[in-house]
Length: 333
Image 1 (cartoon, rainbow, N blue to C red):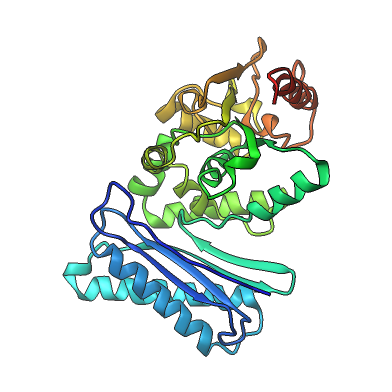
Image 2: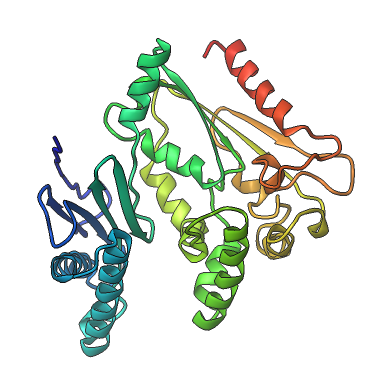
């Protein structure tokens, strides 16, 4: 049986709640159920209106759709909402610059289909953690998360009941303070050029196995401005041990595409980096480990997460993770 609950909170920093939620445990159009959350863009005009308008438009489009594919249903509904919000912003100066994030989910049998725009997130956490603790008999888990997953894990620890089952969080190559070059890409480069860069990256990511790459969506969550706000709103949870690991790619040609390209951009805006994340952005928690090599190649972001499945002279990624787990055991976790 499917059961749902919803709540939204204005928090301690804002004077206006820009969230909007929609829940339907029963069928809407050709979807068996629909769950939507939107967050108006803080600091933008009429963010509260944008989030409500987006959710209402999406729900109407889903209900009216004759499409059978759930991903297409949600995707087209988002496209429609985007169009009507932009149109309203052009027609009424009081709504100029308004915007919103949105995440939509529907359960179909045992599967969860999701559509997302912006930095609103959906987590499937509690059930998996409960399952692991029951199967293994352990009281608490040690989470190791890499890249943006480190930010997602920090956010997930804020959810009710999650931190009670977590002993430690280790983030690997995570941009805790974001990337200045991402801010530049989204604010200074024309939209057409952004889309050209995104197509190149999405093509490369598809070849690497990502079934639905979204370069611009990911970059939005990597901006220094986003991470500053995220850090303010996501304090460490008492009782959980936090530590982090970072590395340095010594030269651009030491990494494969796309890191050989972003290394140069990141170096210009963020200084020494791993091809994607600047050194200043790695540290988080009470312990920090920085990895590099005496060779002219260095260790890239891709090496740290074993993206290319290749051996790096002087660095064994499998041994690195084994040592990481052994160290956690020595610390008593």
